[in-house]
Image (cartoon, rainbow, N blue to C red; front, side, top):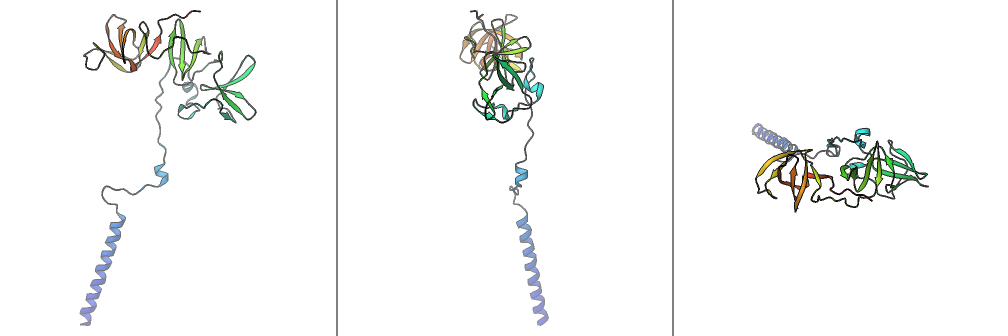
Length: 243
């Protein structure tokens, strides 16, 4: 009897030990569809960002010095004060007053550091900031850089006032350039109209009518059709501003 009872108690103890070990195994293994939380070091690991900046024909900051010193290309506001200037900066004088320039931002020395100031009219720089769009105003080649306007003069770019007739939407007679890899030329102003042909980036057309978000254009070979406005940019205004 003792042996039988002893064997029964040993078997009971063994079964409890096995059940206990199995419960620990189930607790350690995540349930289906749930993964264990990662450590903060893994969760906050920075991802590499690809540089999608396009190459320009003119000299711009990204090509000469790499990335802009301003995070996400958000330039500091006027009145901000910095104790030190970016590494790649330029100094120039305008009317005897010193200015410093770095990637589209202008500074003047102050008592507490370097103060961000508006672009001075007549200021001359040799490298434009990222994100500028070229256009012709009459016979002059100009650039729009975040509502700051430059005129190309030789190897320099001069800060100018906003051109009087500058606009973001083309008018009849303006020339636009295709600003996407491929764009459908349609027989009417809408996606429901059939496609005549495909235009490619860099092709130029003259606007002869505007209907909402659509331009009626004439190509250099005389063909006519409609294109979506958002995939173009104005490169030449019809007016020749004088006086």
